[in-house]
Image 1 (cartoon, rainbow, N blue to C red):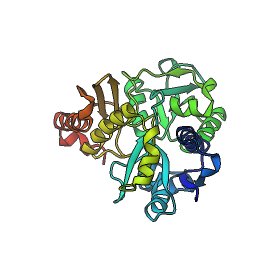
Image 2 (cartoon, helix red, strand yellow; image 1 turned 180 degrees about the horizontal axis):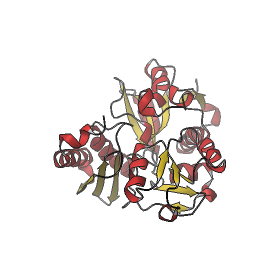
Image 3 (tube, one colour; image 1 turned 45 degrees about the vertical axis):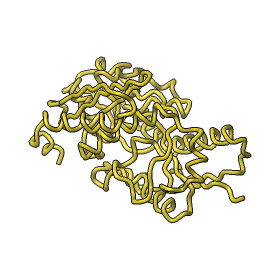
Image 4 (cartoon, helix red, strand yellow; image 1 turned 180 degrees about the vertical axis):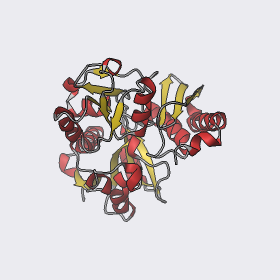
Length: 307
């Protein structure tokens, strides 16, 4: 039997996520390691690091090459960071499973001070995420934000070289890399809400491929699937992309879901928030209605500031 071919990017974090997925499948099915082949692909999002994602085409640049091979059958499934996924996927492809979500919070790595609020006046924070930029500016309008792209190790090196006073990374990624010692502050999701999908590993496959769906079913984490369904519906309603400062986090408590969504202007000076509760089984409807509510409350002029 040919090994299952797992598509992934080549960064240390992407590889850690692919290996975690493979190891869970090995345990779930009692398969040998050679039943799987991890196929590393270079994406444009990885190759072009001197410009922001919004300048070169958006989130899909981290998945395009992988999805091409998934669509034509060269790959059986692909492992991604959920927050890198566009809201609209190529025809015939879908997110089939999610691993249990890690901590979704953002982590500050401070060089000049350990906490965001304690950074010196007019400090420099490096991040290329528009959401993080807007949230930093909302909390500290005096701070200068500069672009920091590249793998986790690249950003930490830039910080160590003195290019910024602090940077921000996903806590989940640092946990998966075993590099939490660099963290100086974990940011409260109430005042610094995470990106939709942050902390969750998703698995993309061809729709209608029952063999792969049956393979992945045992490692799918149903509460994470429900939470991400809500968050992605919220994003889709707002036409969310890397050009838009959007935050959203759904939490599950039994059969209930609590959702908190935020949209901001890029300078962080204006923001709108929505909170919703509902049944976890209605995750998509909850996310869509939250997105509609926040769009109506903010008005068309607010979203024009994103262009």
